[in-house]
Image (cartoon, one colour):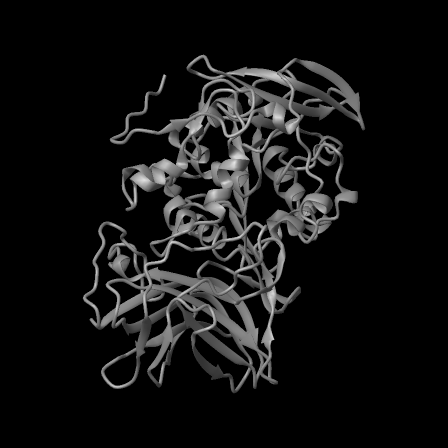
Length: 539
């Protein structure tokens, strides 16, 4: 048995709600047949340490050996999601999904009709599964490993197992794939963060206060205890061993992988999904990046057809279209739900010309006023595709404060000067080209990981400023892919508050624990080499 040791201690708390509060009932094995599928509810699966978790298994009614797809997430295996009702602006056509489709999970009826089994799991410590829940942890990865091996050795199984799903159901795939379970044959991570600290809890060192606070209400249904992420976040303000334990070693992933990212999940999944693709060692790996709403895109017929082609190739050994796929397929956006497809050989694109756009004049804004901002525009003389990482270097000071929270957005303006909207964060339609964040006291870079175009923050200590001190800040702007025609403009917005807040209640990122006071001053020109570095990619 593998025993994990840490130089930190998990914090646990009681459940935020009981499974019964959400309509679940105590586990009791049940078997039925519906819509051509054998449905086994509350199947008990024993983990290596003796803890029992519960899964639902959907498999073909013809009893032929089926290739298992594991969907692992804390949202409740018993609870199908009516996207049209629960997330009406997400764009998912629920009428085309079966009533058994779990949140961010494959539709079991679609897959069983094509010779697959779908296993929806309630992870350890969630719902009625035994033990204490930890989230995207090394311990959870061992549980998924055990479930993969269980699925690969059942009498009804073909022996080759895949992992599927969106968001949490994608993020957990990195951890278990790095362990290389013998029966794991393919993964399809569809938009999942890979770095809890940098991509969810603290953007640029600024605490996220809305989505991070919302998650426990979704993960916290239990009959036992759950990891107290709120307390742990407070106890671990810097990037230490605790946060590093929640980042998989991508280089150890060798299994075939079809990785799907989007430009639209700025502040959640965009960065992490692309970091995983860059880091995995799989010889058979493909990347697709779209500019649409993630749940809608996951369930679109053409997306599901590509998932099927991928799993048919690696779980069933069939010759499919995968053999002719480009290694990288990108949608370069023109505006909301309007883009052009590009095929590339690698990510980031090797022929990218990283181009400096100088900030020509100094500006200032009131850091606590959501209507106060600095704005810089550049007009394109010819068609230009910006695809990849961008970086902003700013010389800044604050006369009244010893720290600065800086929020950055890139926007597209049409030839008439109107802001062009894009899909954003699964449900919104007024989003940016890309976003960036930085708390000035977290400005130190990880020299080993930073590149010319992607500054990576170390987050090892806080370095406060003296009021009025002038300091150079390098701000990572998350990757994007956008086309600008001649006469259209790129706009840089810098301010001291969230640039794209939406009225509550809705699922979004917000950062309301601000250190800002008074004015922020951006210094440009002369000895102040403030500039925006953008990724220009030709035909």
